[in-house]
Length: 330
Image (cartoon, rainbow, N blue to C red; front, top):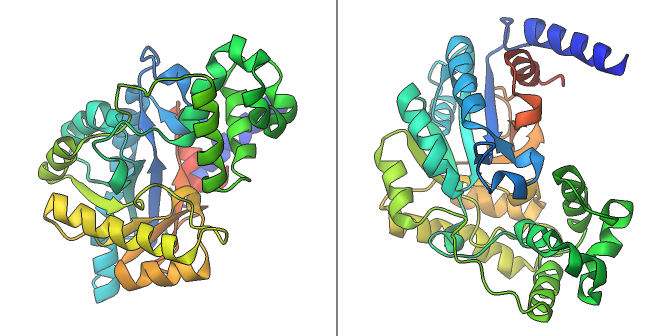
């Protein structure tokens, strides 16, 4: 019964949502992370809410071209700020983090479909083998013998609660990651380093993110603009010292501009977290910034707190599901 009701709601949302109906000028910003095929080994190691398959992504772009005027994020901001006419329904594609698979799988599709996008890069991780902490956690618990026996993993077991009992799938991993987010980035960094030392784990050799040459190649297509996602993906929460928050916001812009030889005027808050101090700093250095708060923007939306709609495979793998997601209702 629940599945049937959900299907009906999706049908109604896909056909009657604001993406299908006229009215006030609106601006959709879609949030993607990773584009990976099911058969790629990285697919099984990632949280479900982070991935869209190449097949789904291509279908998304083709649907979007029928529904919206697709713009680079910067163009909508420039039009809005200068008082130029805005499309009735406009949409921008964004990618968070700068994953290598964005270069491998997303870029060719963007080029084939001629759709612009914005990629928010973590400046001091580009071209390194540094891994994001959720991926390091996933690696730690992937070895069931260590997970069941080693005291060094107790901090994950405690945080995970019931979900940490016999981790066997990506859904449970996602719940554990969500609970660990209650800890600060500093705490997580220290605990991860201690645990990895206790397990004698060697650094991962394969880079998770693009390198500078790949990022430049994406930019040089003329389709991909680059924004800042801080230096180290530290969440801009109240427990992050103000001087570190300023470094994350300002130095990332400086490094990206030096490496890419282009102005960097767009910013993305890691995990969507921000404080009044962080928003003020971002406002001084960037033209606009995106959050992870769900919604559809209008000309009156604060430019440094823009809303987005997160897209992942389970909510978008059919045209109906994708359009229902675009409605902002489900």
